[in-house]
Length: 162
Image (cartoon, rainbow, N blue to C red; front, top):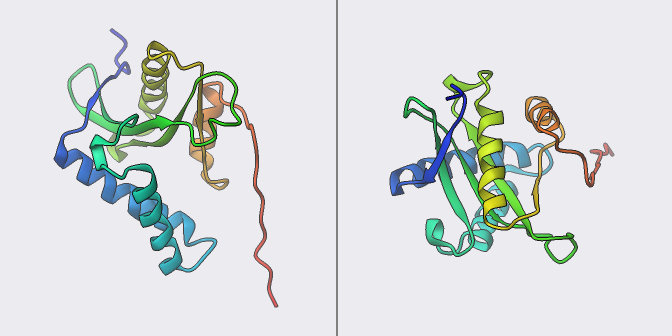
C-alpha cells in the first residue's frame, strides 16, 4: 500500500471540537487581513451557524479525519454541498476545509487527503469538487495546482490609504 494513502472516517466529538477551534482561529487570522478582528470573528461565527447549524450532524456535510496506512491521524477535512450549486454544472461538492497536521506536512499527505476526498465524493455521484483558497496561501495553491485544480474565479482587492 502507498505509504501516503489515507483512509477517511467520521470525526469523533473531540476531533470535531478541535477541528472547529483550529478552523475558527485560522479563519479569523485570514479575514483579519481585510477587516477588523472583531468583524472577522463575527463573520466566522455567522458562517458556522449558516453552514453547520447542527454541528457535526448537519445534513449533507461530512466532517472527516484522515488516517495514514499506519493508523495515525494526519489531518482532517470538511466536505459539503457546493454553496454555488445554482450556478455550477453537474453535481458539485465543496471542500470547506482541509488541514494537514503540522508534523505530517510536506510528506505527501495533502495530496493523499485530496485524492481520498475526490474518491469519496465521486462514489457519492459528484462530478465536481470546488474549494476556495486565500490568495497568499502559496503552499495550498501549489498543492491544489499539483492535484489538477484550476482557477474558476478570482476576487481581488486593495486596501486604500486616505
